[in-house]
Length: 149
Image (tube, rainbow, N blue to C red; front, side, top):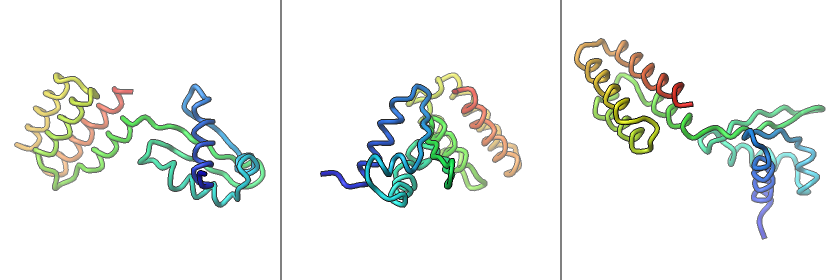
């Protein structure tokens, strides 16, 4: 038999799957009544199994009229956010090339776009101040993310 956390997760995932828009709004009391569990157990599941790293955004309000809104975040957004967060003054050109290669391999960009990003990055590493280079590279990846939605 599954533990309570598994039951709560299955319930939430089932309700999320029923929605066309990848978003569901639930009430803690409804979940607690359905599964016969404490609200703290629901909070535990939300904090451990419905995280941003796992592709979810959770908004929660307690009290009367409170709700839990769970949105499935496209994996692409998470990947781009992760890449942007890794770009700093210590990021080497080879790492940027690796990020671009990953995007191409996973069909998030085409090879032409990848070649343009690599050329721009190469120029940035050749002649830009570190701060400007970091800003430009982050902007490149943010722009790719915006156009891939």
